[in-house]
Length: 139
Image (cartoon, rainbow, N blue to C red; front, side, top):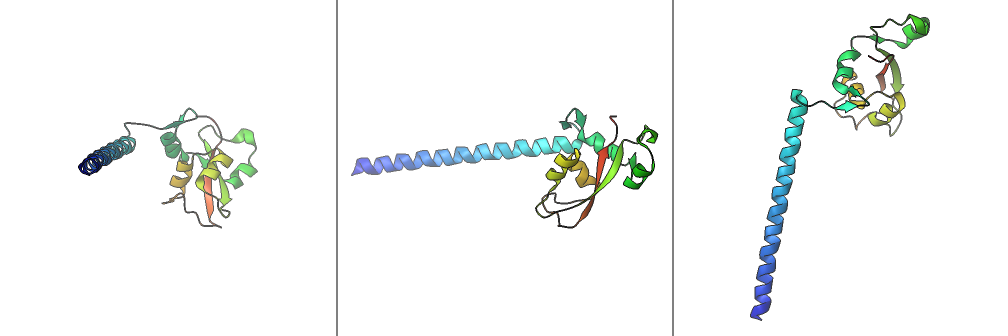
């Protein structure tokens, strides 16, 4: 009987050590994630997608947007070189999210989020009309 009690005691201690170690590993992962997030927001680290920096797209969106109406009135040749983006308007359909728009228009979802001041990119209301900047020319 004492052997069983001893085994249960050691098993309990080992489980306690394992849980404690898992807690510390989780804490380290959380600290690593927070450090990575701080580095991104401070500009020490930049995300590059398809060879272009997302932050540059966000900055350049306001510099050269032409609307759909302007684009339809002018031939493709007359777009000025300093205009890097044109605006497409998209009405949100049920179940659609910014990641779907990224795939459809080729514009990073963070750029669409920034341009439309969207707080939560996972909660878009059906029928909302979003401005989607679409790259006209490579910078």
